[in-house]
Image (cartoon, rainbow, N blue to C red; front, side):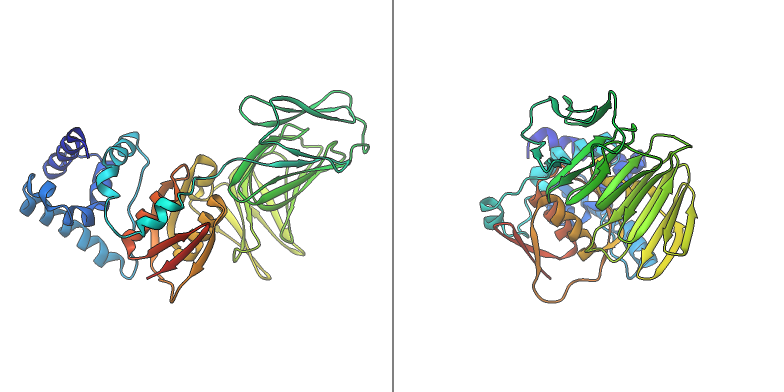
Length: 370
């Protein structure tokens, strides 16, 4: 690590001792306690007895209050904290936990904007390879890919019922955003698909598999409906997220703005901003949730708030297009924190390994053990 990085970190330590550190800086330093313990030269330079005891006292108190939960504090919300982690990366990630040989041989990049568009006539367009500009016309509808990689439908003189349906699909390791003919914006997460009519009729109905975030264009005369995993979400104009992956234990509809009705057969729930409709088996319930966590993926983050390792690794496997294999029993510890989705896979795994989980990468297979 460069000297300037050490100096910056030492300055943070001094502010922490004096009580001048920001909340973000305090959380960051506390999350690095285990690393401080393994880097005695740096800690000693700033009075190990005082700093170490102070950190340990705070952390032990937090753990005692929250047993049996193990917290992984990696809150990168502030720009300053992000810069600290980048500057200290060479030091922090030097701990020999992960199988470095397998990492070097199998360095896996994060997902990107990738998708395929299936037109009503059966033609397929690779949106990743397609050039910006007009890519198709259907019954008075023009489809463009703009400079930001956004797929946009523009209405000229539509012929009702004549164009059929389109489907946009993202692979594992991909995401994409589309503006539908009515102006509704949809962002698809990895391994997801959205089927929709090129020309909307009396009702605007789409079908989702996987996960998507919706910003529905307001139109009181034409309700917007999303069919996913056996449920129907009905809205007029609102912002919401649906997670309907087949490998998850429940389908989650989270509302950010407006009002929606979630129906599972005769069972219905109307939710308001900050609430989530949870469909699990035959049960449909609503509860208050951390909305920021539920939509963190669209903001470029993995966000954990009491999630177990298997839940986290399902997200990671879809985004990095890897297969996860467990060797032996799986830890039941809970994880809290945020990690940028732009991180390479090995960087994410090194953070998770702070909770005594071991990973080995073989090709695109991730082996997990305690």
